Length: 210
Image: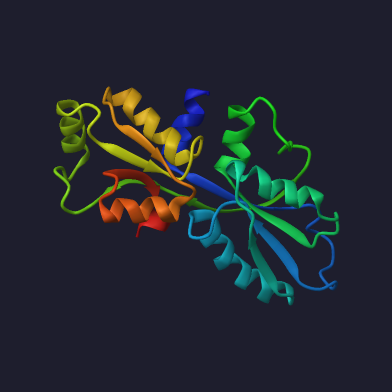
């Protein structure tokens, strides 16, 4: 993967609202917004916040539906399968539109041809989070502890190939430490296990960790 792309993932996660034909009139009933990741994660939280305001602005209810799996690919497949009438939208992220096309040789969608971007909604910083009783309380302390205890620390991610995984791998590569990856099916269960002490830390968005 391009190093500049990985560096971009470290500093922000970008979310866009994409639809098949957004400019059409919305007089045909409720809209459906697909969130291609599990409930409780950044994409889901933003989708639910936006759907309320969007519904007010359009005069039509907007319903959020989670269709998780394959790092967002299943949800975008559902959007492609829907009629091109502007009634189905997708809340996409750096994962679906930036990582997947580079990480996977074969993709079920083409982000440049199959979707129409509507708006950049938010950029979310990624931070290292851990329990308050961890044996370190800053980045320098974390690196020192990890170097003194190679392979002892664990980090959670929302799944293989996602930003929370790749940012962690880049951190290890740049700092020269060995931390064990523990992948989860979404941000919510990963954060829960960090809080419970099942894993030591996580590179998470501030949206889901605060």
